Length: 392
Image 1 (spheres, rainbow, N blue to C red):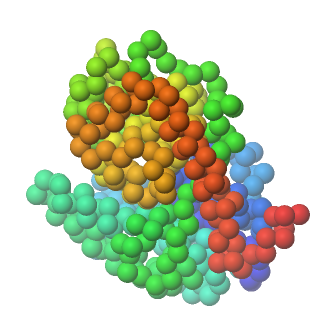
Image 2 (image 1 turned 45 degrees about the vertical axis):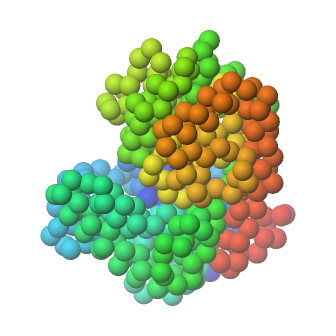
Image 3 (image 1 turned 180 degrees about the vertical axis):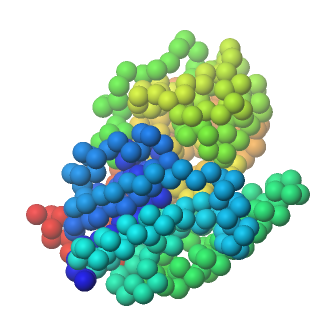
């Protein structure tokens, strides 16, 4: 049976939009649901991700969230036995295969939209409808980068993952009507066919300094980093900033704002560093920042944390890697090492007028360049959708 409905496959529940991958997947889901009946299948890897039936029910014609409890060790074992990438075996689940088959058999599915490469294994081999693959970032390149800096044993495993995942990505792209990436830089790393760039956007009404809750700050000048704090690139970034950059900046306080801080992050807390853990709303912390920093040395695609700070009209200092995917037009400062990072942050702290002007320019850039509807406009024709329904 085929029709106008869309099957949306996601590796993690696309709600609430409170971390990088969920921000993108939620906005993609919402955009498509305004234009077609969408049936969502996704995994949950936390108890919180299982409890959003009301919100998802408002968006989707149907939705089903399956628990993913497979350990990394089991995923690795299955990968070594089967010869497949760990990224796939960790998400391999017969129940998800059955669920996808049932939706396709029951509903008038005319297109399948896959969010994140791990989920492409659930597109049936005999599928002949439209198929759009959102890789977001090129994961094989990410693992290759990790391998270059790993210990010898881990390097072997990471190089294996990069190679085998790369083969899978190219095979998926050969089947897909379009392969999406979050930035031109990511797309340039991929040698597959029918590549399209659909960048992330930002909810500029929510991330508006006029709508923000009361700011969170103390007496000292405050430097803020936001992010998921069990994500290795974020962990590395804040450790490097706290150890190498903060000591070069007199008198400032560093706030690390984000859920699930691992021990390597929690140990940074002290007189000059606050580790918040999960907070109800990051906007108060961003609003209270003299400077927002994104010192990531291993970054892929577009950093939502940078767009959010820009939308909140805060001055941003970012590493070259974190700034690479964003068309910021010079409205953020880019730093290349600890000395230049410290200099740019200290200069902005010491010149409030310049910092405010940078923040206002950054928000103006976001408003002009990064609205979600504008970013996703090219998606509708890829799935054979008519925007008339969304406009109605």
